[in-house]
Length: 307
Image (cartoon, rainbow, N blue to C red; front, top):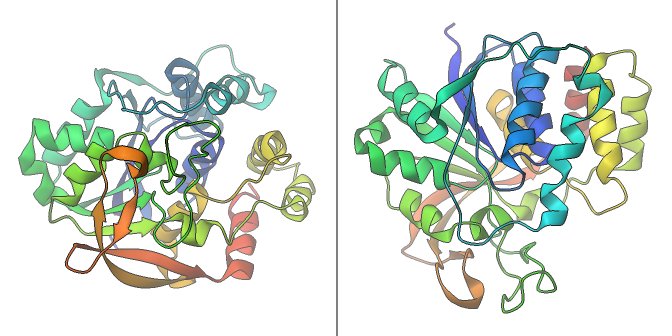
């Protein structure tokens, strides 16, 4: 059986790094490369950490590219600084030099080249904003035909968003951060015919990172990947933290863990609700992950990271 081709586009948050780790453990997936979008991170440490993670996983054959796109509403500094912390974790700094290559071309150029050069359909796994995807589509509209689907961690359909009004005055709290960073990019992608599978806050809110799970990871600390994951989650456990990107990425290997639902949607691009993905009759049809078998999901992560 041929492997599913996947191009990962992440934006350097703690859960983005762990989604990268998880993707590398999937036997029936062939990663074409990893693009880092400069959203929930500072780009240099985020790119560095990503390359070091691939070294740790023994996957220095996977190229990394740095996207140069910019969003409309920057992530808070408090969120972005985690990229420095992860890049300095001792487990990622055991070697003097990074082996995983950093491409000279931009992330958006690499996305175009990757899609144009393959004869097989490609899944875009996007765990950050859609800006790099939208930019690539503007550069080369023909790549739309090469994209089998976009699996995106983003949006909030029937629950509140996570853009806190205390951090973003003038917003109404209805948007999710990956959509809010660049609502126009979401609108651009929504105008395509590409099938979209959404992992919205509606489902991620039901799957928290718990102390119990982190302790179980700790018991697997003799495995380097579990050790790394445990260190990352220890950074964020004092706050309300959820399996955002890791949950979305799990879908690639095990869609049967999930129940899905079709929705008709539109994107609000301006005003106090900008970034809101609005459920609206007659809108663009997407499919959203609706429920997940949590026991099976948690067990799957522990199994995959026991290496």
